[in-house]
Length: 128
Image 1 (cartoon, rainbow, N blue to C red):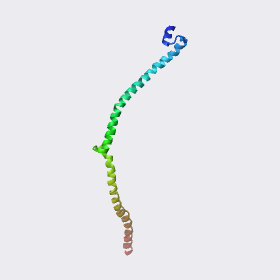
Image 2: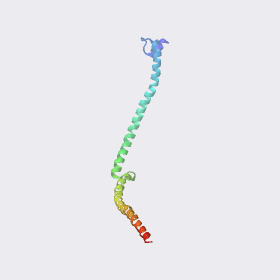
Image 3: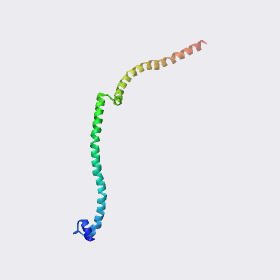
């Protein structure tokens, strides 16, 4: 029993009696450790393998399609934001045009309209 625990402990010279219970906890800790440790390398390998395979693949497609798409602009999906700038430029042209009639017929007309309107109302009212 003692020698067996000593063999298990791996150290017969150093009090196997005290080391046995101490190593009993270590094997448990080591038994629990290998599980996460095994998961780490497995995850590492899986993640690395999966990350290496899809990463370059997705990155190539992402960067390639992204750069090529933005450069060539064959895909309307990415040309939409690009057309957004064109639309902004086109929107800027109509904006000053809208401002011209807006200021003229909007503010000026409204400002002039009520003034002569009141005068006209005052005119006929005074005439009556």
